[in-house]
Length: 370
Image (cartoon, rainbow, N blue to C red; front, top):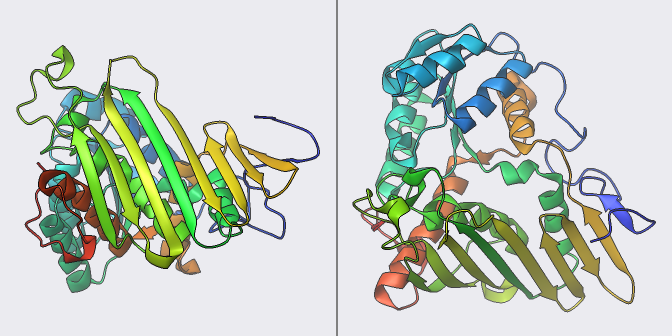
């Protein structure tokens, strides 16, 4: 795609004003978290991102917790924080105002409930939880304590994806969407464990389901899917007892708003780089999207929007800090949005199991992840 010229705009520079929440600046600025004390749960790559961005927003990182004591100590030292080997205990500390949950998905509910009951607000990485029952426990704790829980669908703060959402609205109705995401076996093997992170249908597709709900204006009404485990038998996942489904083709019905098809695989040979491409087709044009940007065609001329270098995780954390400071909702996904995305993911898995169409809204709390 072209990266310059008269018909090229950066992903966040939409004509007519900001392209979405917190879009007034191209990068988060100021110190909206000044005086807040943060616990970061998880000391891996994502925990490192959260710690860095909370510190940049003016917060004090007071504790980093991870079952890997050495890793927790290393990240904590970078911020003058305490290190803990017990994330649940760290979440419940009375001296913590905000908890960032950057742990494997199956641990989200327990530490979130502990944080809420301890008096803290929570920003949890996506997906919300591994099961609807866990998500319900999080919701019950939030209601009982009056604290705030937000879910880290950071693509909401990516200028390119805000632009895609805007441009899709100009394609007319109905819209037909298609997305292909493919990658080799992931180096973080818990991502392939059905009872840890749940595989790509839980761990990755939730981003798309959140995006597509905003494109179509509704969650999917019906889901059909077929699936495979391409990684089965590969040495990289041999130690995992319950290897998650890693490859699916999904058809989603959005009623009068349109339809979408998803091809998703994390089961390719290790080392195959991750690729992602989308197409949105409507009566008024076509929008193509890949890692480099987006191209909108509504006639003989095309307008290309280059991908932005804005860090969406930073934008999201600054936005959450502003919300907690009293500036009102900033577009960070709430718990209900996380649950709707989880329902769509679980509906895909159920459709693969049954071979039939599944209504995500009708799934019961005991819906299975494997």
